[in-house]
Length: 180
Image 1 (cartoon, rainbow, N blue to C red):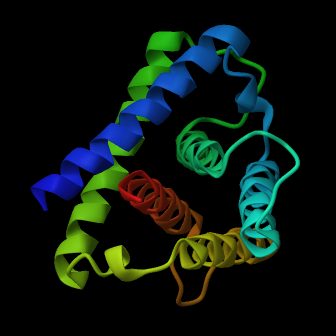
Image 2 (image 1 turned 180 degrees about the horizontal axis):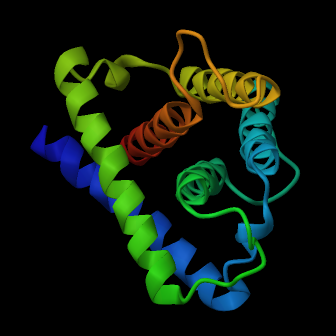
């Protein structure tokens, strides 16, 4: 587990670095994104990965690892957005505040990973990269259905739990890509 934790934290730190640099470049323009728009952004990234996996070729240089990193960052952005008031989506957050919120959500996602990893015995290491993409797409379709249900579920986990899983699947995919 210590190796997994080191690999996991290295992936998250690289994603956080990208997030901070983009925040310095663009501010927190992502604050204007509504829940369905964030889900669509993640969907675009996951669908591109799936298409490249199926066709075994790509025409745009951006690599699959970059798309998984974007999925992680959009997933954490979704979790941050869920905790912020929606009354002023045009209000820019200071970089330090955006970083604090990112670290807070990433730490929570890691806690969930550690608990699940304990119970599942690192089963994710035996999954194919294609499975991670499919699982991410499945979680996105669930999120979109929950949004159509006005955020309500009868028995299932909510939007936040699905984003936590999406982030963790993308981290695992990157860990396996790095080990390849």
